[in-house]
Every structure is written in C-alpha cells, then in structure tokens.
Image (cartoon, one colour):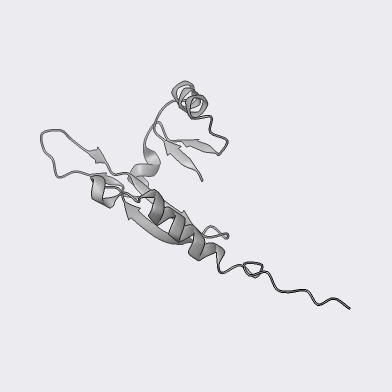
Length: 104
C-alpha cells in the first residue's frame, strides 16, 4: 500500500503517526502529479478545480490490476472489493496452493 498526499511534510507525518502507518507515504504538495495524471475536474466554474481520489490495485510488478475512480461514495472500493482483488492477484502466485509432499 502507498498513500499519496498533497499535504506538506509536517502534516503528512502527523497523519502517518495518527494512523500508525508503516507503509510509504508520497507527497505532492504542488499537485504536479495530479495535473500530470489528469486527476482533476474543471467542470465546476464556482469552486474551481476538484481533485479526484483514485485507488489503484497493483500487481507484484507494479502493473495496474484495477482502478477505482473515487468520485463520490459509489466509486470508492469497499474493503471486500479490495480483499477480492488481492485474493485474485495472490492466486496467480505459484505457491498459492500447497502441494502435498510425498514422503519417501
């Protein structure tokens, strides 16, 4: 798991500590990555651009297995969906099924 945040180092570290997170946090305070990946919505003329949250499920080689567009509640993955995605990825591993060892 990786978290990407637009906060500065101090706020990012506070959130990380509050979550007791032991996974990597990446920071994009100038939002350059969000613009580069076109993860912004510019359709609201009143409130300006909105940053669209995404969840990426990655395979072992870091290829994208699935993308959830987190727009509103219905686009965000549930814990069960993430569990199923990870199970599907894990089932591709050669050691997924334990074979019976023959005793000689």
